[in-house]
Image 1 (cartoon, helix red, strand yellow):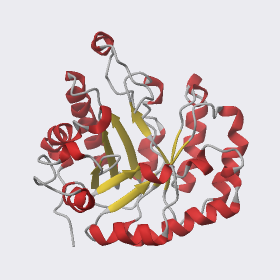
Image 2 (cartoon, helix red, strand yellow):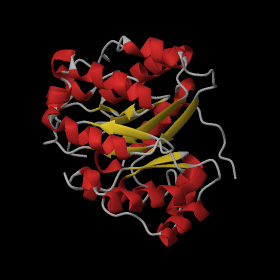
Image 3 (cartoon, helix red, strand yellow):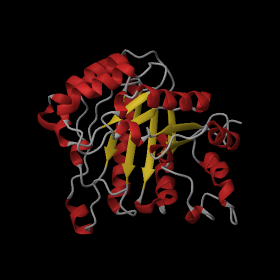
Length: 290
């Protein structure tokens, strides 16, 4: 993942990794949710990694069996492949046949929608996406809309047109990348208040080179966190510990679900980072069902 990447290790040593204070809106919103035991969902961006054979995949695992073993180690996936094409019903069915009944797919919305001004309000394309979500059935987690870096606050009317077209039956989270959404501490709170009325989430991206996108605004019963590591630099472990503390606080207030997606450069070291995160009691998963 190149977004916000810092290649100079010396620069990583100079960054303050403290999480920002909670949005003042979090307490009231989370306390208003029906009481529910929190569920932790942990995953990675993809399962097709040969380097994981002998780590989280058994020795000599064939590529055709990667998803089967992935879904016995993780209980969700940040499904990046859907950003490039909307899967056919046959492809979706093949995926579902390989995963346990409790496994969730969290698909990144097709870039023909997210990265096209026309796509955001293209009814036929949106219906194709919704049909794919229906095919996922009980394996459907939140979709997330990753808006392009040039999508600034000036396009807010287009964003709201898209949100008006989004059915409430599908969980959704928004990921903003343009700095204008985070400036002056005015725009994000107002947006958060609106999204809370719709239970639409805000993706939290923890990446070294863009500290502005590391916010702490909760606008849905779930938190979706994209944790972007730096090849197991010591700061990766420090940041995981900080997330353990913050998520434990949100758990006490009333958060329902945490979707925590682990990234490392080329994702080769995701298994090692995941093992550390799992060693923190908060992130322990229940055994897969089915």
